[in-house]
Length: 316
Ligand SMILES: Cc1cc2nc3c(=O)[nH]c(=O)nc-3n(C[C@H](O)[C@H](O)[C@H](O)COP(=O)(O)OP(=O)(O)OC[C@H]3O[C@@H](n4cnc5c(N)ncnc54)[C@H](O)[C@@H]3O)c2cc1C
Image 1 (tube, rainbow, N blue to C red):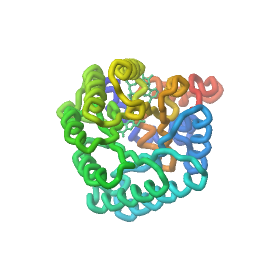
Image 2: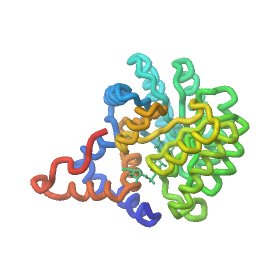
Image 3: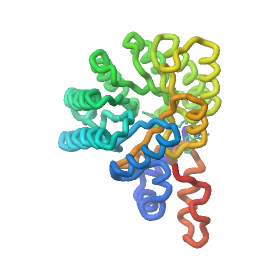
Image 4: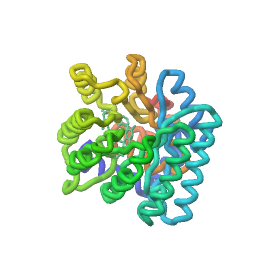
């Protein structure tokens, strides 16, 4: 989506009236992208996806906490989530946002909290992805990953193709033989730090995937872009890449057809399953990625009788 359209959507999503509208009339659209508010909702979704041959990445929604107490509460909830999935015998990867653990308040404390998650996940046999957030925290996020990675092989990192800096960041991390999820980038970033044009982001995305594979890293190709996915598959056919060094990841509710096709063709494919009460910022980023999603929200303004039920949307 063009930079200005994304800015507009994110600004609108931040407004009081849009939140009210979505709370009152848009719950069905939220459920397309978010498994539910409770861990049991997420476990049910993950079990269903497993039946379709899909792995999962579980994300307890939350970010940008404003006090140490909130960060401690988030940590406790994430640890409880690990215990709950272990008790339910589902084995997802986990995704964590460092600002949910207080990165913007105190980096050392956030580090300690993240380490507790890495320890508990390792005891339970789970892999943890450190999500990448706005560019203001990129450097601190990388620092924390670099500190943890030598001890915790079960921790991976996300890099965003829209940032100019990312190729250098990748080169800096490669000596750690990291597992890297590459995404295009979901936050609103100024042209001083990020490519404004989609074509440049896409070009950088491919370069990053190939550089990571050539440099000994493992890659999670996290995109719904069929052209990029096809390019990665043909690269893997032409170059000797062990199959456990490449996997595909997509978001719950986005291109479920493509998710199933990749899994059926034998490629390891994981679906990112967010759950929790703090779903609004995640949901507004999903709206901003695609103009059609805004159309669905605006259509929900119409009187219920004039709407086709769940027009154009299929859950999951
Ligand atoms: C598993 C996973 C984890 C992620 N983690 C992070 C992270 O840590 N940090 C971060 O900044 N970003 C993250 N993202 C989001 C990412 O940066 C992009 O914003 C998002 O994936 C959309 O871009 P795209 O690669 O699918 O390509 P696009 O070119 O935007 O989309 C390609 C096609 O996918 C479909 N599509 C994409 N988005 C939507 C949508 N919202 N609704 C409906 N259809 C859609 C459309 O058919 C579109 O034409 C993650 C994405 C995935 C898949």
